[in-house]
Image (cartoon, rainbow, N blue to C red; front, side, top):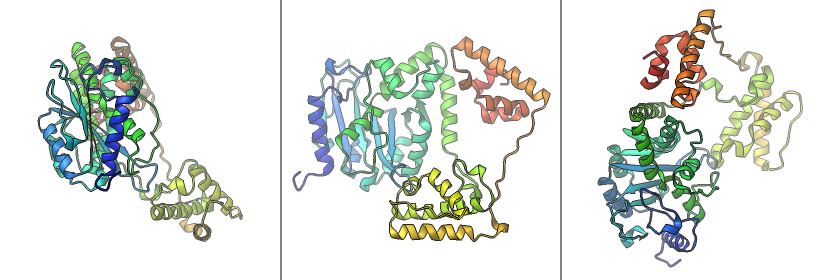
Length: 420
């Protein structure tokens, strides 16, 4: 790498070289998503400067929809952050940008081909992302399994979408049972997406080529896939169902997931312990949180939940466990936390507040079964998964309180249940 060549410049060159020499990573650009042997175009920009971002914004400004995927580092840091923002933006028919400022771009000039520009935005590069947020506000955002990406976009960009097209929801509305992105790409384009990198550290810089390949594959096919799915939805008159479900997805992603303050420390299996062991577990959990924040690592990197639970039981029974991977300082702070947990007076031992549901009446059981039969009949007639129309829990909640139907189900679901 030369002195004036950035890590992203180097990565762009590597991707271009591999795109020309390897058939397992060729970024295709047409609504038909041709196979690597069919020719086509490649356009990938690695955006880590405000100047490059401004060039991307020009493309977004003339697009009606933009496909987006995100990558974060929840498996590698204490506080999850947005690490990559992959985008596909449709471009003019038969025109491919080849400007040197945007890294790499090649392509044919077939006027029948609809092209797209694929880009990876680096939110960790100190970019001013406010112009990007504003540009996306009025665009339809194409996503797959939108909930996580919408939450990450709100976290990293302070962005809330107005309109989305969730290809996963669209596929399920068509009765497709295998609706992962890989399954849909294989179904519609006959291509196998490479596996791997799901657990990678997306905050790593410079970004390895294999990780860039994986990341761009998650967004590259979404625009073409959305076109195919919406055509099928139109054919069976379910496009409005998609709009309703996508609107609900936006609403749900905007709601912060919260736990009660006195329940933060509970881990899997903690419901079976009480009294002093529970007090020790709470103290050890608090210790683990402090250690994780200090090291900027997920809590399970410090001590896994199962070991944390077993440690609490051991300490409460008079045995102090030890862990070889602990430093001297961490071992001492662990033991001090354990001792503090043991010293908690009985009056301050944590109390598990169990959730006691109302025992269903015979009438509630009858209404639940009536709703289930309607659901299953509609599911069979329409070729949909019954649980996609309404999960069992929603049926029971509505049977107990009909007023809850509006908050639990969107109009098309309520209509199929006869409660619109």
